[in-house]
Structures are given as C-alpha cells and as structure tokens.
Amino acid sequence: MSDRMCPMEEEELIKLSKRGDLDCFNQLVERYQQQVYNLCLRMLDNTHDAEDVTQIAFISAFKGIDRFKGGNFRAWLFRIAANACRDQLRLLRRRPTSSLDALPLDLELEDRRAISPEQYAMNQELGEHIRRALAALPADQRLAIILRDIMGLDYEEIAQATASSLGTVKSRISRGRARLREHLKQYVELFP
Amino acid sequence: MWNFFPRDFVFIIREMFKRKRECKKLKGMLSPYIDGQLSPSEVKRVERHIEECNACRRELESLRAVVSLLHRVPMVALPRSFTIAARAPRRRPVALRALRVATAVTVLLLAFVVTGVALNFIGAGPAEDKALRQENAATYTPAGREALEAPDASDVQPEALNASESTWPVRSVELALIGVVVVLGGTTVILWQKRRRGEGLKRP
Image 1 (cartoon, chains in turn brown, purple):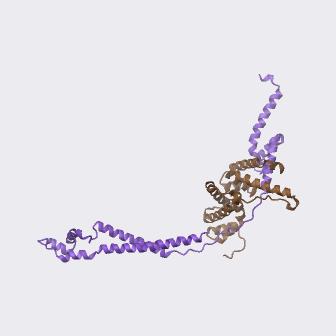
Image 2 (image 1 turned 135 degrees about the vertical axis):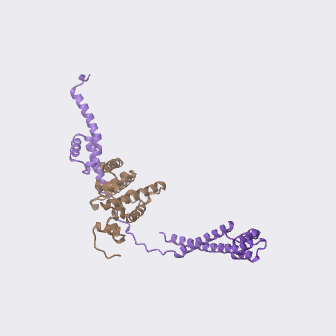
Image 3 (image 1 turned 60 degrees about the horizontal axis):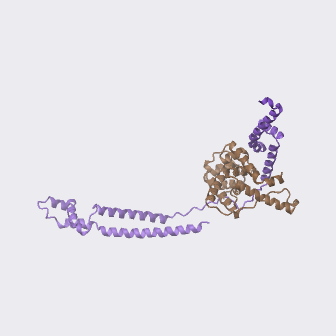
C-alpha cells in the first residue's frame, strides 16, 4: 500500500493510474463505486448481477484506462459500466433467472416519523411499482432515465456515457418518461 | 361553396387543427422543457401553448410528477468495496514448461528417425533390405568405393559392409525414443492435470 493518503486531484490520479498505479486507481474506484453500483443495480434489477458487473466494469476500466483521452471521467466510467450491463442483459436474455435477488425499492421520505403506517405501506408499494416500471423499459431508455433522473447527470454527460447524440438522449428520456407515466398512472395522480 | 359557412366557424376549425399540430410537435419538447434543455424561443413557444391547451398542461404536470417520483429513488448503500486487489505474481510453472519442451523435442527426433528410416536416409533397416544396404555401403563407404572400382565388384570387403551396419542401431534408437516420449508425455499430462485441479479449487 502506498503512503499517498491525502486526497489527490482526479487528473493526477488518472495520470498515475495510466502508469499502472493500482492504489491511485483504487482511489478513483472509492470515489465512484457507489454511483457505478447503483447504475448497475437499477439497470439489472438484481443485486448479485449488479455486484459482479460493477467489479467487471472497474477491472475493465483499469485495463483500458490508456484509452481514456481526457474529458469527463465519470461519464467514461458510466459508459464502461453501461456496456457491461448490456452484455449481462444479453446473457440473461439467453439464460433467464428468477428475480429473487431484486432489491426492494424504498422511496426516500422527507420525514419517516411523520407518516402513518398506511402511507408507509403505500410508499413501499409505489417503490415496487417504480422498480418494475423501470425494469420494463427498453435498455436504452432505462439507461437514459437512470442517468438523468436518479443519478442526476446532465444531457451532455449522458450523451458521453451512452455514446449518442444530444438529440437521441432527449428523445430517449422523453419516451422513457412517457412510458413510465403510463405504468405509474394511478400513482402519478396521487403524487402530483 | 365556403361562403355558406360563417367566417368564425372556419376560423375555429382552422385553429383547432393548428393546435392539434402544435400539440403533436410540442409533446417531445415537454420533457426537455422540464430539464431546462430548450432554447429561450422554444421555452416561450411551450409556455404559450400550455397556457391555452389543457391536455398538454395536464401532460406536463404528470411528467413532472414522474420526474419527482424518480428523484425519490434512493442511492443504495454498497454491499462491499469494489477496489481491485493487487494479484500476487503467479509462480511460473518452469518444470511443466521444460517437460513440455523436452517432450516436443523428443517427438520431433522420433519423427525424424522414423522418416529417415522409411526414406532410407538412415541405414540399418530390417534384414530383408540387406542387399540394398550392401549396395549402399558399396557406394558410400570408401572401402566399398574401392571395391567397386576394383576389376571384380563381387570381391567387396566384408569389413566395409559391417562398418555401415554397425553405425546406426536404428531399431534400438527408435524404441528408446518412444520410451522417452511416453515417460515425458505421461509426466507432463499428470502435472498439467494436477495444476488444473489446483486452479479450480482457487476459483471463488
């Protein structure tokens, strides 16, 4: 383990990672692992697959860091993770598995103590509906929606992460939201 | 013919179609409008339209509700760290590699000897080839050549014939090489199998 314990600039870490410094790359992993894991989890809707694919994505990123020519590192990482998710989804289509590993989606509440048990149960039910509605979206639209509405990326970053044009991103988000609205119609009326 | 319709009615119909067309065009702009991704002129166009069109206003509100629901999807805590562990340098299987090379060399040598015998490059084949070998010996050994050059070719010295026969005990060499190939190859296969089984156990 190196003695570099103080936080370094991202560019410096990337530069050293390109020279094969695993400790520096691991600092980058620590910065982005939660976002990458959450992206994989929402894309695959399965905790075990999400864990495996996240690890695969980071290993691929370390092996291919020489190909990173500057720009937005997070978008580059998300692109690798999204490609790994696509590969996994293709594999799952050939070898379908049960969704027992799907993690229940508990929506965030402003104040958990202030709500009644009925509201809490309703919240859980809504979370489950959102999870299923997301899983039912086509992969491209799901990726765009996750990156925009859950991870909070801007359109430019999404375009980089998905290797597509701004117009395509706009259209995928637009169509994805419209589909989700159809799936969540009853809840959308309850939660204006 | 159009004179029969009141002018206002025609105007209303035309406006209705115009609004329908505008609704269709603006549908794709509502989502970027929520995200602030439209140009100022497009924003004005959308706002003007939703002031007049109830259907599009409702659609915009429902889209906003979907977005706010998605914003409430939490970030899940990590089940473990995804940092990459430095792999210990693997011991190079030198013995196995050396054995494989030795087996390959011996096989090549054996193949060379067998081919040589078959094509008569190497002497001392089976006993029935004796006449041919005698002729070869007569041609290629100095004693044989002298005998050939002598007035009576049938007086070939017996030492000259025996010299060529005694140089290459081919059958023994072949058998020895086959033995070495079997021993080396067998050891290589056993070691390789052991290594594979060992790797299989280490896999998570």
